[in-house]
Image 1 (tube, rainbow, N blue to C red):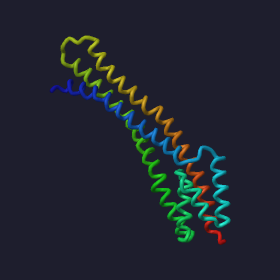
Image 2 (cartoon, rainbow, N blue to C red; image 1 turned 45 degrees about the horizontal axis):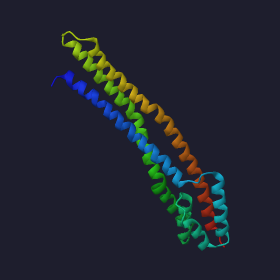
Image 3 (cartoon, rainbow, N blue to C red; image 1 turned 90 degrees about the vertical axis):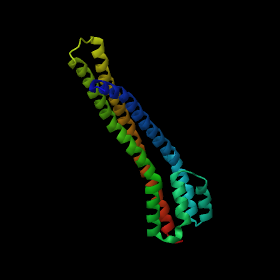
Image 4 (tube, helix red, strand yellow; image 1 turned 120 degrees about the vertical axis):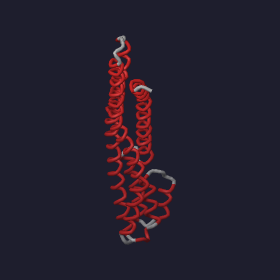
Amino acid sequence: MSTNYLAKLLGDACYGFLAINFFWGLYHIILGFRRIMELSFRNHNEQTEFMEELMTSLLESKYAAAEELCDDDARALPQLSHMAIVNRGLGHDQLRQLVTEVVQRDVLGDLEYRTGWVATVIKSGPLLGLFGTVLGMMAAFGRIGTGEKVQPSQIADEISVALICTAMGLATAIPFNFLMASLNAKIRKFQDALGTGLVRVLDALKTPN
């Protein structure tokens, strides 16, 4: 198998690698945004209403009502509040540590996993594009180096592989950078809202009644 043929074969395969890279990143972007929607309140007012109702129950020591309010709500703040209420006998410091561990492991861990893969896809796109570019140019110059009469269309075919791979790599990295920034902004907003709510819940459980 000649080097020229191998370079052309791998150059063509780069289309597949780039497509896989793109759809893998898109998959994690979609799941990341979906996960944020599942875990967070739709807006600040909705969370405020929930917190007012919850804090009223907690400050009046109506723990059963507070547990019932949180139990059927799959969002992060209600579920973590429910866990804190159920384990309120641990003491403030231990309860705070427990909540922090669960937040990091079960809530933020999945989001970090998604953003980590998206970051890898962003870095891999241009690298795969460059790999395809090098292989395409190797195939083109390898054909010229044979000394045979070469048609311009044949050279153009190999060079087109190089240019298309470069374009596909950039077409992955550029939009995904913006999507990643948007996802990170939503994650930070979610973290801030979750942290604020949990501090209020833990402080209410700490207050002697």
